[in-house]
Image (cartoon, rainbow, N blue to C red; front, side, top):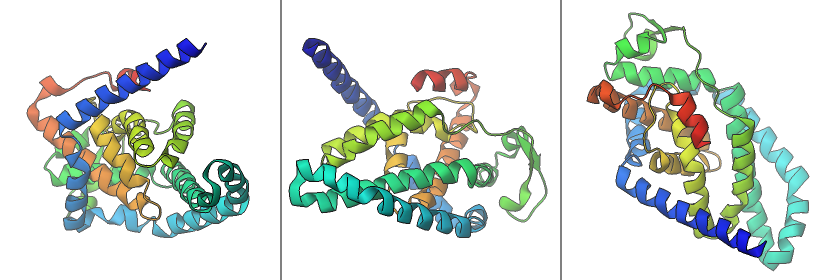
Amino acid sequence: MSEKVKEVVIEEVDRVKELSREAAQSGAYLYPIKGIAYFWVHRSLWQPLISRLLPLFTLSIVVVLAMFTLTYVPQAAVLAIFNGPLAILTTFVLVMSESSAIITILSKTFLLEEALVDTFDGTLVSRNMTDLVGEGRQVKQGSDAGAKLGKLAKKPFQRFTPQALIRYFMYLPLNLIPVVGTVIFLVMQGRTTGPNAHNRYFQLKPYTAYGMVVLGLELIPGIGILFSFTNTVGAALWAADLEKQGPQTTAPKLREEAARVE
């Protein structure tokens, strides 16, 4: 049994090394940063976020208060066994990470799906990809990218699956290991978070680097949701660049490939 566990651990370590090497070589990690800059400059892309600020704020307050009320003391008691006095701090970090994850999942599932699609499509329109956007929704005449977006003709793909949620919370405690644990968490989750960003684009590339940066930004308590929008802009910028490279870069079986990644 111990040999089998050792074999699995070695395989996971080798896989993390390989994913990290691919991530460093791909250059995709730059797109979330580009998304922040592009979102800041193009204020026409702000409207989907602004329209959701009040419900997002309310959801965040409710989740954080509930998590600290219901889970802080029990988790602190368990962590005190391993961390001693530091359990006060590590439990705070853990509860905030859990709260941030829950807020992100609930908001993307129930509050932000259409807003993020509008942000993605608006970014493509601003990059003169009107024909591409027109394949999935009406495109009108308007003064800016946001005003040109009409009714959706194609619904976006499902963002979260039960398997993805289980895997996310299974790996979440890795963040308690300083530096190394967080890096492993970002690598393991980044390879599945990345493909989700292009559910509005029929393409699958080496996503681990992109997904690591996306996940790292979205895990920041308090402002992670803001980065959901800038990351969506980054994904759209990447999609626009891929589209300009020509049809030879396009993979028509995104769902099958994304299912394989998960």
